Image (tube, rainbow, N blue to C red; front, side, top):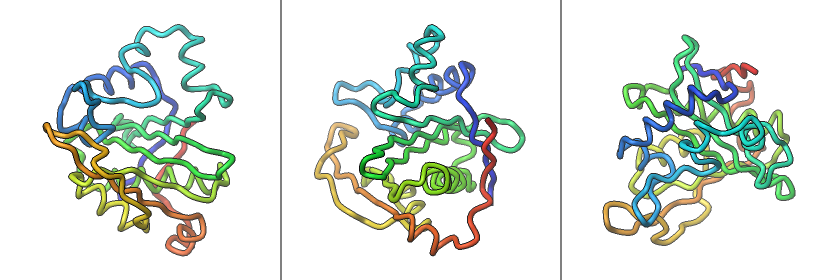
Length: 198
């Protein structure tokens, strides 16, 4: 299995995120597009972060009291190549987190880095944050992402009808979730897919 490093986000990483989001296929597999056509990026605006003050930067990436509470990581290979981003949108009162993963370097799609990144994020969710549930929102046209999450052990929890604009039409998206207990049953020895490099 591929192994990834979860690292703090740098401005150089944000430059690459901005470039990746210019690629239609990449942004459609990340947060998609807003109804007015621009590539969506939740959590922060990459273009604004390129020139953000230290205070603005710390508010997004280092403030544990920021609402909504997000953990944002850069995803690197063991060879120190920046390949993507992971986000957790955390709801502490409910004990859950929405997981979002982007492998922005298309040359590395379908090589195990997406799976390794999801497993790394899940270990962070369940072992370090002590949350009970993790979930994802996957558009129906992203069949490979749906399969990836199902192979890890996510289960279908619901369908958001026609929630995603895509190529002039509207598509359903699927809510898939995994519980702490299910994750531990599937991976009783834990996972060795990542290094947290902070």
